[in-house]
Amino acid sequence: MKKSLGFGKSATSSSKAVALAIGLAALTLLLIPYIYLYENVIFMEKTPSRRSRPRTRHHNVKKISLVFVTASSANHMLALLLDNLPSIEKWVLNTTTPTFLPTLEGESALTKADLSIRVIHYNLDPVEKRALKKNQANIQKLRNKFPYVELREFDYAAYPSYFNIEIARGEYAFKPVIVEQVAKELQNMDTNNSTFGTTPNKGYGLYAQSYLYWLDAGVKIEDGGSPFQQDFRIAKKQGIYTPSSPGPLKRWTVQGTADYLRLDHEIYVSPETRICSANMILLDLKNQTIYDSVIKPWMTCARVKACIAPKGEKKI
Image (tube, rainbow, N blue to C red; front, side):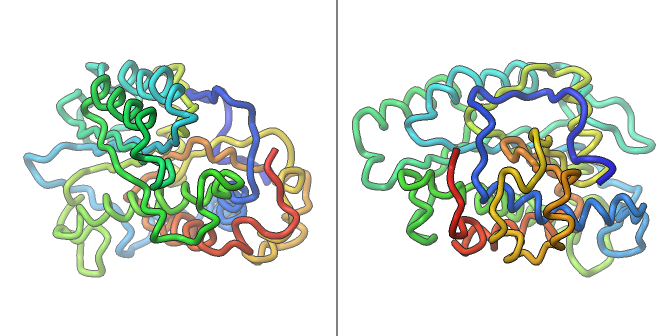
């Protein structure tokens, strides 16, 4: 594989060691066919289809939607409060000139007024523990210190029992379903303008550009300059940015997920096939191919234990 979805110095860092479940590797396995498509110079934006991006834009709308999404249970609340959310405030919410974001052809330089920024947090505490005083106090701290954060409760009742965060870390299955849920929700905001529909586009929809950036609760933005800019440049060009982790894919996974997703065996065992870290995932939501070929299948995989956590997998 000639290039990874993330290269160079990352603008983000994790406060925990790189330790991946097979469930996170599923993202890599789904990305591989897309990477080869990209490296064969098949660019979606040049294809005359419903996915193409028009060069006109509706007036009186913000140019860019940027939504940060994270999730945590009580044991990661401290990292969320001390690292994750303060870094978003420092490098994104408090910036007056968002130079980290790309501008489209023919557009002027961006200002803070051009942005619609949201931050969404999912509470992963088991339902029966959400009423505990300690957990309630944590949520209240979050509300008081970061009142702009949209607080959501993860709906465990909608998913299989292995999603329970207190058993094998929920197989990390919560992440794909949250990412897909929010991505779909944000895409639907553009429905009235047919940005993702089958009828001819009349413009960009609500926004000229739309991004979703998943950050694990233990991840913070360390540099809002050129490394952060690179994240967005890669996402704009490829549809997705997620940095690679050390070592080949096979080192961190068992073959069950690869078999379930029908990944070519030679690609799976190749030392050149890298694994995505998946603790940070930046998506260009105007790129429907990424949603159809990566995000939705990743969510589907999470709902099947034989895919997200096949026999032989283990957490490290």
